[in-house]
Amino acid sequence: MRLAIHQFDPVVGNPKHNLERIIKASRSVGADVHLFGELSVAGYYAQDIFYNMSVQKEVEECLVEIENVSRETSVAIGVGFPKRNDSPCQKQLFNSFGLFGEKGFTQDKVCLPTYKEFDENRWFQSGTLEQVKIRQIGDEYFGFLICEDGWNSPYGGMPEKYRLYEEDLYEMLFDEAQKNKIELSAFINISASPDYIGKQKLRVEMFSNVAKHYKTPIVFINSVGAQDELIFGGRSFVLNAKGDLVAELKGFEEDVYVVDTKKINEMLVVSKSYDLFAELDSMMGCYLKGYFRKSGLVGKKAILGLSGGKDSTVVAVALKRHLGADKVVGVMMPYRFGEYTAELSKQIAERLANGLGIEVREVAIDEMVEPIVKSLNLRVNSLAHQNVQARVRANVLWAIANEESGVVINTTNFSEAAVGYGTIGGDLLGLPLIASIPATMVIKYLEWLKLIGEDALDEVMINRPPSAELVPGQLDADELGDYDYIDPILESLRMNYGDHVKVREQLLDKSKRENEQYWSNARKFEDKMLFLSRKLINQTEYKRWYYNRTPQLTPFSWLRWKWPLANADMNQS
Image (cartoon, rainbow, N blue to C red; front, side, top):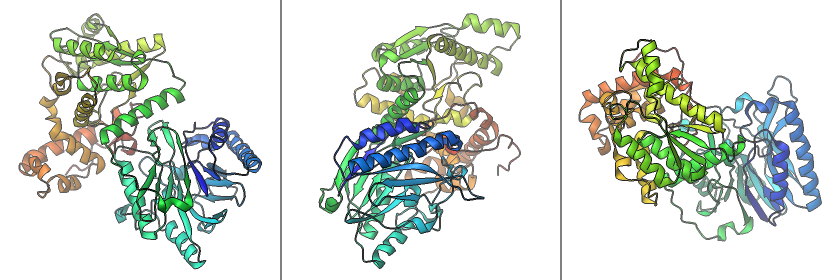
C-alpha cells in the first residue's frame, strides 16, 4: 500500500482554509492513503477556539467534504479534528483522528497530556479503550495512536516516572494482532508534537525502542510550523521492524513522502545526526516566519534596539537570516555617550548593521531622560534613573513600530529573564525571541553562526563582557557572577522547580568532572544557589508576567513554568 505522509502546517481556528490545503495536498501525489497530523483540520492548539460552536460546525462541514473527495477519488484521507461529544457530564469534545474512505473509522485520543506546555484536559474528553483496535486498510493491518498515546510505552526507554497513564495502547494493539493471528504492517502515530532543541533525537530513540520490541515498523506523522509559543519541527519519520530509521522528512517546513508499507523493512537505513545549533537556527526561522504570517504581519519590519551587546547581536542576525535584511531596523539609543553608553558599543552596533546590510538609526535619548530625572528629582544612577533609561528606549522603539507598522523584538535572554534583568514597561516589551536561550548558549550560537559564514560577526561581538550600560562601568558579572558559572544553576533551578535538594544532587555530584567548579568549593556554590534562587523564585516572577509569549526553543522555556506571584515567605532552606 502506498501511504502518503503529509507534513502539514494548519492555521488555528480556520477549518475551511485548512480543508482547501488538505484536499490540494492529497491530490499532489499518487497514493492509496493520505495522512495528515493531529488536529490538522482545526489547528493545534486552537485553544479556547475549540469552544466556539460555529468553528465546530465548520469542522463538521469540512469532514463531509473530505468524505466526498475520498469517495470521488477512491483514495483514503486521514485527518485529525475535534469531534463533538454529546455525552452528559463530560467535556464537549474529543481529540480525534478519522480515516475517510473504504473501511473508514474514527478513533479518539486516550492519553490527554496536561502538563508543562500541554493543557488538553481543558478541552477534551479522554477516549475509551474499546475504540482502539486494529484497522484494516486494503489487505494490510495497522494500529493507530494519536500523539501522546504513543509516548507511554514501558519499552520506549523513558524513565518510569514519565509514564503518566495506566493505558498501554501498543500492548493492546499488539495483543489483538497476536490473538487474531494478524501481521501488523505498522504502528502509525498521528501527532502534533512540539519541539525544542534535542527533542528529535530523543523522539527517534524512543520510537525506535518500541519498534524493536514489537518487531513492527512505526510511521510517525508530525505537524510542522509555529503557533504562539509552540514550534512543530515536522521531521516525520519511518522506522523498520528493527527500529532503524529508514526515512525522515524535512525539518521545519512542509513536506510529503510516499512509503510502500509492504517494503519498509527492505528500505535502506538512513544515517542521521542532529546539530543542536542548526536545530536552534531552523526553529527560530520557523517561529519568526510563522508568527509574522499567521499574525498578518508579512512584509512588516522587525524593530530592535542595537546595543552592541551579544543579545541584540544574535537577534539582529537571526532576524536578517529568516526575515531578510530589508525587513530589519536596528535602533541605537545612546545615553550620555562615552560615559554611560561606551564608544565601543556604538562601533560594534554600526559594524554589525553594515555587515548584515540592515537599516540602522541613531536616536540619542539624553534630551528625553534628563527632563524626567530633573522633574522627579531622581538620584543619579539610582534604580529609578536606570529604569527611566530603559522605558524611554522602549518608547522610542514602539513609536517607530507604531508609525511604520513594525514589530518590536525583545532581546532578553533566559538568564536575564530568570533573575529579573529587565524593566517593566521597558526592555520586557516586544516579541521575546531568545528568552528561552541561556546567555552561554547565545555565545555558542554566535560562534556557530560565524563558523557557517555569517561574516558580519567578529570575536569582539561574541566575547565582549555583557553590560546593560545603565550606570557607568557596570558589568553583569559584578552582581551575578560569570554566566558560565550561574547558567547551569539557573537551568537546574528552573527544571527542578526551585528544589534546592535536587539542584545540589545534580551539581555537587563529584563523579561529573564538568561540575568540579561547584563541588570543589561547595560554600561558594551554596551562596550563589541561594542568591539566584531568591532572584528566580521570590523576587522576579511578577516580571515574567509582562513578557509576550516566549517561543519554546529549549527545555528552559517559561511556557513550562507556572509559579505563584506572592511567594516571598516560602521556605528557602
